[in-house]
Length: 412
Image (cartoon, rainbow, N blue to C red; front, top):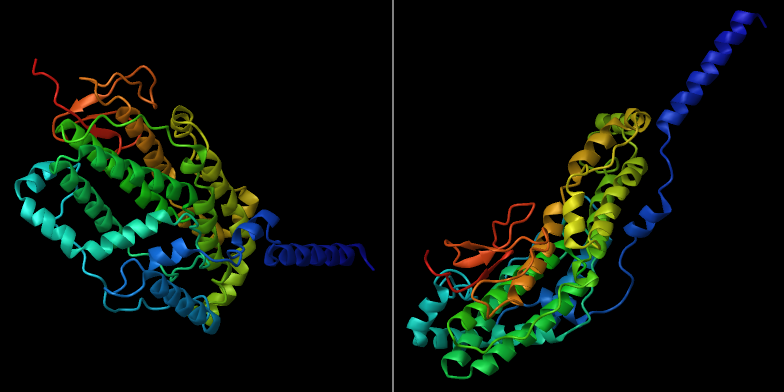
């Protein structure tokens, strides 16, 4: 064989090897495979109760929750991942309307005190929802039983939020009857139970909803105390590492996104021509492997203290993929960049709640003498619009999570 023929043959072999390397995907990372695994078989009365919290009046919430889970499992067994199950329309239990305001916000306390008849009527009319809420909080075995998917059954969080408003209204009714110690005990018990739920929450949306409810309970106690309706509350411990942890929610978020990335090429809705192009320009396993470190990083950051977390905000949000991997997987690099949101805002809400707890433990002081967890040595500032003291923080706090109702400081 002549030299030029050898060179040509060698070049052809090399190009073939490169083409094969370009075409082939890589194995899934063992850690990625573990995070993609569906929930282990088991049971959870709390999961079913939450799913069925908005069941029609007179029905058993847990039974309704089980029915919804079973219907989704049957659908998933008979349809591809790309075929989403439509949300079932049906009757729901009646919820309180906007006439039941949030006790710790604005002039809500004054409004509810001015019309005791309306307050009493609301509590009577929605007594069943309030009982369901009490039963829900008492259950401490919460774990998600449905595999993460775009159509997995989700709780009606509006029903949870309105039930929580009813609990605070119930405490106000007790306080108005001169039973302030009972009202405080009721809300403190709620706080203990909600924080246990916060430890176990494995869905990001549930975790953030619980942050909101815990914050509102703290605001309500502070507003009642400011009005002289309840005695001084006991100091509360800061959030534990388990309460702050986002590892379980990040696993579910990764599994949700990863399942979609892995089935993209085989989606029946993808045109045949596009599928051929995707197989050349898109590596599902590589895309999933490259996205895993971002979710792991958020899980690790959730274990940091407040000041340490604030320092991490200066670091890049995402890890940088090598040029070679971006060239081999251009579509995956684009999808990976847009599929992962900035989770720092969710981490910040947990630390903002810790800041609220710091203010809560200063109740009774004319002006809170407490260090800002984000910036030790810095004090809270008065917010005239919120009628509350608030800590500054590295990110915006539009929901006032870093604030607590307080008596206005003397005019200067």
